[in-house]
Image (cartoon, rainbow, N blue to C red; front, side):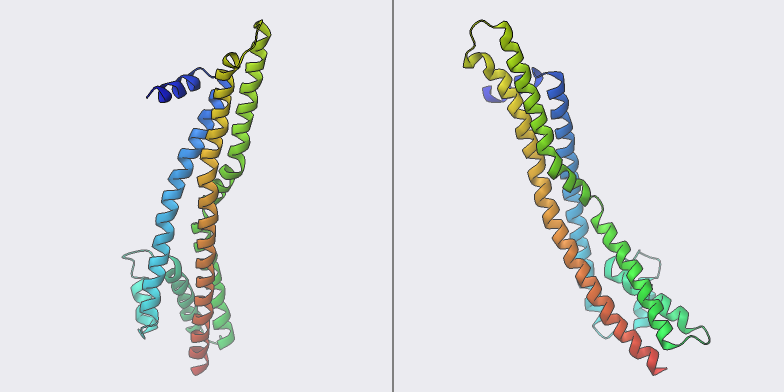
Length: 225
């Protein structure tokens, strides 16, 4: 308990620039954890929805009925389902036009799927750059607070006739807290960024593979007509 009180006293007794650095790092850490939890839910949802849609897609269900279910308006399609919906909608639209050959139909569907895929990946990558920024900048912000605090501590020695460890220890301790807070903010952000960036890349590959497989199905349908 005394240790906690001493830590609080060191923070409250720190110079204004060091306190501002600590506040900035605290805000960055809180924002990072909020993004970490929100991004975990979003990625878990994307994986579950991809699993569910692939199961329905490869179960042999009619593509027209599957499209109607996806675009019924009761809920918005996400992820792989959104890619399917965009591709099938464009394919069906072009197929109804006169004079549009099979190649044009397929290319239109592929463009629509690429656009939808890019939009879905952008949504999953949203705020990941913030985690990367916190992970790379927070240690240097904490180091700035440490350097400033140590500089203030040594300046205070000018008014002391005999310098001892006890004299400079409080100032150095408060300065080192800034470094510790910088690491506390940076380490989870770096870990989360690396993990989530990898998961997004895996989903991207999964979406691309689905788009290629669906393109093959549409190509066969276009040539059968």
